[in-house]
Image 1: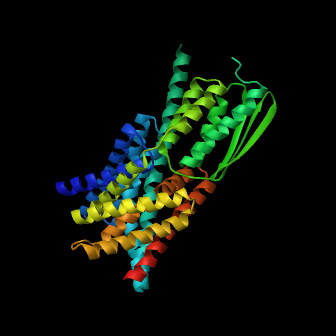
Image 2: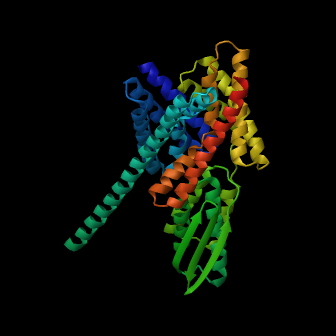
Image 3: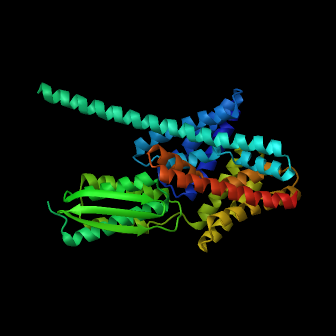
Length: 159
Length: 255
């Protein structure tokens, strides 16, 4: 299991770094983008290892990478996309797309449809994962801001 | 402190629209472009109203100073992803909103950002290969697969850079590149024993996957900008379709 995690982590890290260079990310942010990718990849592979379905594993992976992306973005004061874009790519169902095409060519319509539907739903689940985290962050930040102004008003009243 | 006069308003409009153009060209989310442009304008206290409307292909910005409204429209065309530039324009706008600088200085800053160079061609080539090799391991390939993916990744990057240089449309570029990826992968499986060409094909076409379009589509939709979300989503779908068509065409010939 440990070797599985190390393998997934290193390979997802390399893949994300590769994309980071293509998208011109610089310095410390490049390493953090790779790290975000590694977190997504590890979570995905680990949940597959636990026997979860492809959909659940992808969802957890997307949740994890989006969460760490938001955290790193706050720490570095950088747009969140810098981290999420590269990190998401290893999870994108390129394999599903390819096998769908393969089945279409071999003329197996049933199999092609089921593969295609699964690919689409994986893409949907990835989107959902990122959507959940970025909505939660927005709400969290708004509540935090509201509480801060509330406390400030309070103190002014006490003065 | 009076920084803006009637002469400067025109210049401010031009500079801010340029900043917006740079952002869209580098692949920023549409809501971020709108926010950044408004933030830049509002950092000058004389600007009473600032409103912008941005789509993936154009910018409209109008500001009101002294009860007089000026508007500028900008058309955006070429696209190459550059997250570093987005980061720099974004932090520039935040810095300026705390600590206003003159319009001339703002223009200089934008010039500086635009002049920033990217990684050299050879480095992107190398890391396209490294990325593809990483994907091969991630998709449970062995070392031989990842070496093949490394080489094919480099080839794919060469092809896409060449097509981008001559402004071939992205649908065609992706279709051709994925066809070449399939061709090279199956060729490598013939040449060298022990290569699983499925893994090599998948990991090399991952380089063409529209990751940025997917992310931006989601983030624009979350921000409530459904129009941009939809157009980015369409871009992502079309790119995926192009990859599938290219790969399918080559597979049906070779298999």
